[in-house]
Length: 286
Ligand code: GUN
Image (tube, rainbow, N blue to C red; front, top):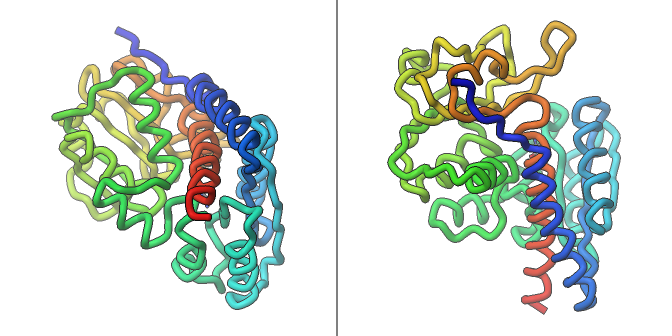
């Protein structure tokens, strides 16, 4: 039986509709939510992602500040800009688009952001709170995936979940969000042995490798009725692809996400939601 497509564009729109209403409410209280983005260098994929984030902000009435910095900027110059934004009362969220050029330290950069403005949930403060079920600001892709499960009323409790990613932006926060919902979570990575066997046993597979030459998830690797969430997006044979071929996977899965049009739009929608949360947080501390 062919499975159900999890359409990220539709679910993202429902999140954006809610964010738009919340933005209007905040504006009535005199708070005009504002997101500052920092893009460093000329990575064309990153530039496209940031542009999409600005377009989405506009759609829901969130103001933006757009910093496009030279690829050769030093760590101390970048720190100065982040400190300025941390101190700016009119800016509620700060996003530094990753990956960074080689001379910059990702941890030093992201952990410089005020935890109250940390819309990526990457600061040690917010990442730590997440492990204790107390985070207000959670990384956007993981929370977007949880929103997809909610939308389709997919019950996670007791399910065997295989995560194929261990990054700070995806795998680690997802691990905690899934654990909170009582899933049994296995985090896999490049050194994991018998990945195919582990996938065969999974009720839910969330994959974010992003290199088809190294890894492709095919229908013969999953069990009948499994749920497949494909987070990856990369260029392969002139096309934008995920880790799996949707047309193949959906023949055997009960639910699956396409690429593009799956997880990607959810990441953007959750960024908007986090910006609203950050704007509300700012009003509670003055
Ligand atoms: N690069 C790819 N995804 C993301 C994301 O969610 N946040 C940031 N800051 N950079 C990214």
